[in-house]
Structures are given as C-alpha cells and as structure tokens.
Length: 215
Image (cartoon, rainbow, N blue to C red; front, side, top):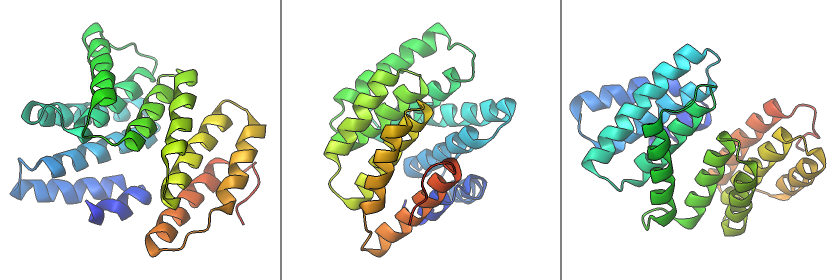
C-alpha cells in the first residue's frame, strides 16, 4: 500500500506494525494487510541486533506468509516474503530443518516460474535471497540482471544500490566505487523519485561512510 511507503523507507517498522495490526482488527482476512504486516515483521527482524528477538519476529512473519499462501497459493508477495524469511533464518548460523530447506527450494522455483511476478522484481529478490544465503555468484548474476531490466530512474537507483552493497560486502572497493559514481549521475526529476532517492542516499551514507560521499 502506498500509504506505508514512508514507514518502509524511514525504516519505522514498529510504527508500521502497530498501524497494520489496528487495521487488521477490522479486516482480519485482508491478504494485502497480512502481507504488509509480515513485511514489517521481516524487516524489523533484519535490523534488530538481538538474534532471539529477530527469530521471534521472523517466526511471526513466517506464520503470516504461510497463512496467506494457504488462502492464495501463488500470491507473489507471500512467495517472495517467505523465501526471504527462510533465507534470513539460515544466515543466523542455525541450519534450516530438512522440511524448510525443501520449502525454500520450492519457493525459489515457484518465484522463478511465476507469471504474476515481473522479471525485474524476480531478479531483484532472487539476488537478495542468494546474497543472504551467501551464494555470491548467483546473487551477482541476479543483481546484474535486475540492472539490465531497470528502465525507470528509481529502478536503476535501487539496482545500483544492491550492487553497491554486494561489492562492498565482497570488499571489491574498485567496483563499488564505479557503481557509486553511476549512482551520483542519476538525477531525480519527479517528487516520487526525489523522495525515494533521498532515503536511499541517507541509508547508503550510513552504510558506506568510508566511501566517496554523494554530492
């Protein structure tokens, strides 16, 4: 939902959770709201430092996404969301159970063949999933594919940002610097682009303080 965009970009996940939970009291079976709540649970878990707390919120997200998929087996947001939840769980050092490994493989396959998910969204999210799983060759392949599929300025900005994080984590600072220069050349024109760009740039500045600054 568009009215949740500010909460997402400002990473005010707990505030988003409160608002969505309030709306769900009136519409408990609303799939869009359920997906939004799971989204906030997942992203809060990805930011919190305490792993115990993170697992609690990941489990909440997992239950919601599974609930949505029982109602709508091919729901794009739930397929992507559940796959990302399982990938993040695996990054905590605790191996996924056999059933969950099988489920994750099944989800990735469904995402790859889904006609409801655009090629750009597929590439971006599969890159993120494989990056979390530390399968760096596939992560880079999908992030690059996402960049080639990006047509709008905000799409290119997000794709470049993903590659920047990837190369920085791989300590390939030469490629990271090249990507950063390309990001700086993108000039937002619409109010939506300016809004998205400003928040992305703030986050990148926080993450890459040792790298050249945005102008």
